[in-house]
Length: 166
Image (cartoon, rainbow, N blue to C red; front, side):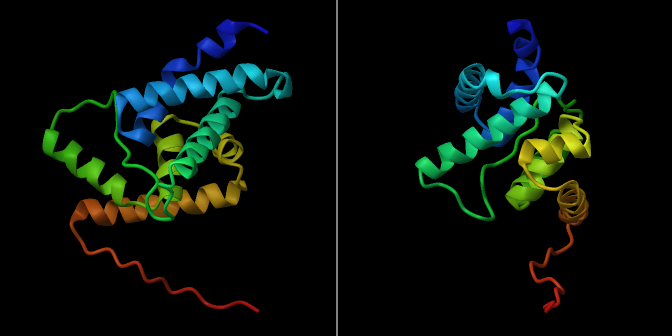
């Protein structure tokens, strides 16, 4: 194993951890826990597969496990997402974006962060979150639409027009 392979992903892991936790200290702890798990489970990584997606999957699972352990897990609120490293030309716009991201369901927020911020492909995000590619695409579409609505100031309704399929 080449530790440089794992170390190369630390900045992206830290950025994603920061977006998940909203706190630099908790983000550092999450990255450390992720790296420990990756090193302990490195024998499970398949050579030739995408290490970045594998490590994001580990981080996602560690984060969810930590939330469950603290009994903070809620369906509509996993953590307040915060962007790091994004140009802050207008602090009010950034505040609005952070607030809108925090109002998204956790599933949509995670996909938006992985695809939009971390620039993972749909397949990589699918692997990281352990969901089908179609689920990534639909969550991304719904998340983007809801984010647009929130940023435009329009009211967001939680009711959907779902039909029962038998």
